[in-house]
Image 1 (tube, rainbow, N blue to C red):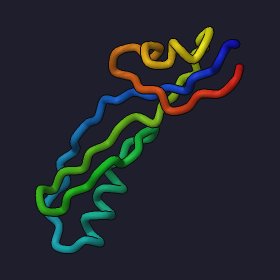
Image 2 (cartoon, helix red, strand yellow):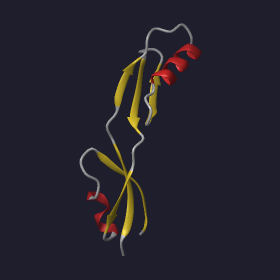
Image 3 (cartoon, helix red, strand yellow):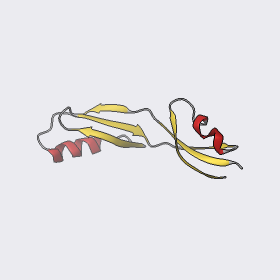
Length: 84
């Protein structure tokens, strides 16, 4: 039975956030620096670093569940599986 697997990239990018004097200013700077099509993974006020990743997903088809562990190409991970 075929299945559809949704995959996404695993790569992340760090963005340096300029010195801010409050958590609210830091959060506003992180929000302003977040590029379209990306999600925030982690934000660290102490280091001034925000980690982001692409929001992009793709659907691929596999023949059976035994392929689930090897279906995602390097740099991608499986998020969900459903009957095709």
